[in-house]
Image (cartoon, rainbow, N blue to C red; front, side, top):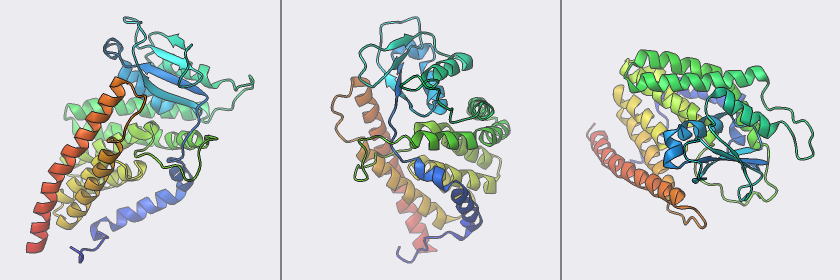
Length: 324
């Protein structure tokens, strides 16, 4: 397959748009992979009881809007069943005396908790927020619109989903990237250039990547191939090419437009990402609790299954390309 061109003509205009986007946001994009050093840790209980009370939604909301210096992580049961979602406020990841916050859900309660985490420095000094109030409002509004869009997408109301995703991305994209840049600017004192970066991209922009992917698939259902292609490319950019499903979106766009070469290239890229994901979640997890190990096994199994299925698809596409 050495004769295949690495550039797909049908994508050229979109690539130019994305190059300009990357140039404008180059400092932000580069900062996405930089490790952070947290001054506060929020451990969100992920026990069955807290999940029933909405802990997953709380975890995702906190991850999307947490200010610099605040890391949001999954936590184990804290024996406060019936009072969830429970969030532990810690000074470090191994804190033995966290402050336990009960019933942390809803916009006002979550933002109040984040303000409590970020309003003072170690010596009591005021810390200037990474986002101005109006920008944080835009971020929260964009995130909440994405949740409405997810519901429309799940119910196959694709036109409403596209409209909502468009508004969500327009409102939240810029503040989300500014916030991520500020998070990434806090460099750990123990980090060196030789440290190996783990696979993946920041949880804080995951909602944005998901919005682009779902918008892409909604547009395909409405036969808006050009719009779907733009969304698929954006998903790969904002995920730093670390999301196999974003490349699968590109493959679906190419398939819908009869671009077999482009589909082959996108599927190959997806397989590459699933291989990286499989390798990452096969690594030992010393000190990890049972839920963390179970989550790693689940992600590894998903990557293995997708890689296998896409392998059959690549073989089929290569036969079609040889025959053409």
